[in-house]
Image 1: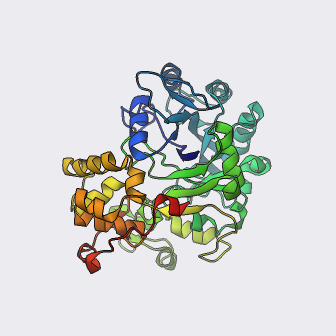
Image 2: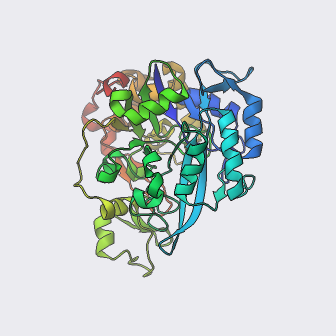
Image 3: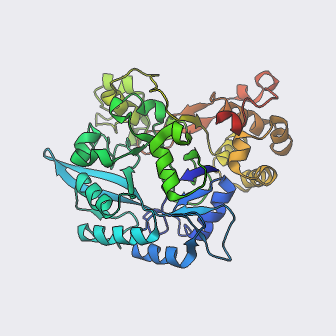
Length: 428
């Protein structure tokens, strides 16, 4: 069975999250997106955990849950997940690191929460802040159950991440120390992709995975990054084992936004509207040329600092990846609209999803002629350009998302190719 998994999201109990981020909305929009397994997010929060107990029931697949009737949707499953922040000292510097934790059952998740409650309040936020070091965290949760799967969240973002420029580490082994061997995966975050991570040889043994870290159920957030696996039968254990084994074990590829789209890709200073690629930022010593203050170091620059391999290097046997942009943003850009929630965008979006079954089906499988018939030439043309990875993106920086650019020339390019370059099957 093919699984498209988004294993890192948040609930309505996390800060800056939609108040409607509940099981009903998550399940409904997971179906629209084309996901079939989604993390619950925030299982450490007592209020959300009660809702999980009230609204989910065990599926026939071990470790996976489905909404209880009447909200039950066929082939939409949840697995227990949460994100936590650890604060600790290392070599005279305060380190603030985010980690994602998956549990094999809600019973184990409850036990994990009980263990973590001694390090900080679990009620203050869906993503709790814990006064514990990363190796202590890993030891505590994996000693409880070796089936618990823990990995660094959005590993390259400037704040609160493993390799973060402001409070992170230069090596995974420094962060997790004697527990590093119990880390089997790393989450790319929106501002990096697998090729950027392949440049760091220390990461070769890890599964390079991608999740949305979504704070809302809208499909331009939920599933904007995901993992595609092929397993004999879906279960929590099958998912974890496939990720550990890599492509040979059924971990086929990750769905990525172009890293330029992430809001920390380039180095820059939002207050001055200044952004630049890594080479230029290093030439300037990281100082804003407008105000003279230090810029926020982008992920591209941080990767350059830590890379021990040239750009373009790929370790053998790694799963593939594909760059995609959320369909609603493709439609909005093609129509010259700023807001993906615009009713005009949703009219087209709903028509395409109704015809092809899910957003991922539209993005990867829909025939050009059919998209043009339903959505117009501009949308079909830009979708084709996204598929072929030839769109221009104004890179994100210092908390500002990147922006998809649709040049007028793209609208009339060579009468546009009528055939689809690849289907979903081709990418697998």
